[in-house]
Image (cartoon, rainbow, N blue to C red):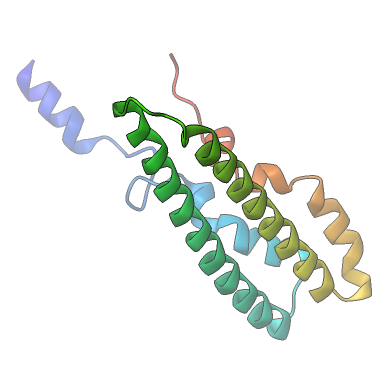
Length: 143
């Protein structure tokens, strides 16, 4: 029985090649968007610059969210929780900024499109939320 178990563990195929990531994650939203919009080389280069700026801005905002959440949860150990409401309001404001950055990023992508690519962009907009929701698009394990 032990030999069978060891053999099974050693010789079974991983359901997620390349370090445990599912195959769809290897392609990622960037490549899917480039492919769906039929970007040429110049558009891809500009798009990659847009992505770098977007990632930097989102990272800064996410850092602020983490810091604010830390401050918020520290109030749980205090008697005076008067700052709780202002911290929660700040979190809402930061989330609004994050969504605005995402939206403006896609406006910039739309502006990058040539007139004949705008139809592809319109089709893409119906699927954008799914592109970035890895939890929904990841294969589920049986319960």
